[in-house]
Length: 131
Image 1: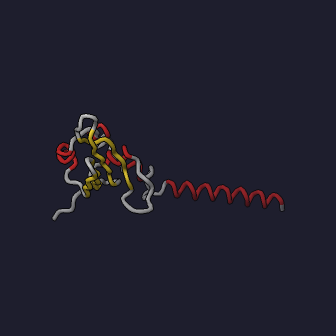
Image 2: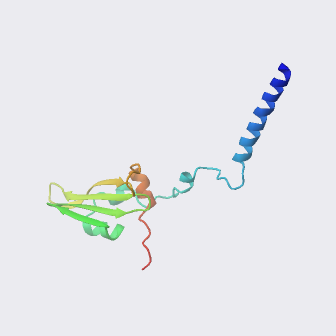
Image 3: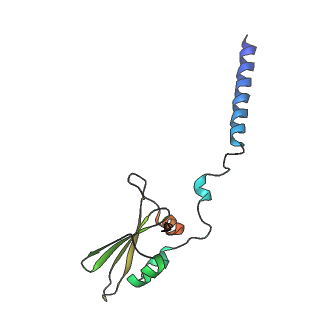
């Protein structure tokens, strides 16, 4: 009787391993997580591409901002990017030159985790709908 139980246990373990292996090799299952495949090989932008730009250079590089809010001598801009909302803050330096001094990434939807800034920039701007 004991021998039968041991054999049944071994068979069940082998069946479970075979099932797990079969699921992993299913033709429709991706070999790697989707997030790895969606990362572009070459980033669209790096932080160094944006930091220090004046407003005109920023517009030329990123296009129109989804939101611009002026506060005193500074400016807050939000750009719709593929993976996030890019937050750009321009303010004057000691010489009075207004340029990009800070970058941040915000989630596209409320409740989502805060995205990584470098990954956000790497994805580039969101595609504009044809109108």
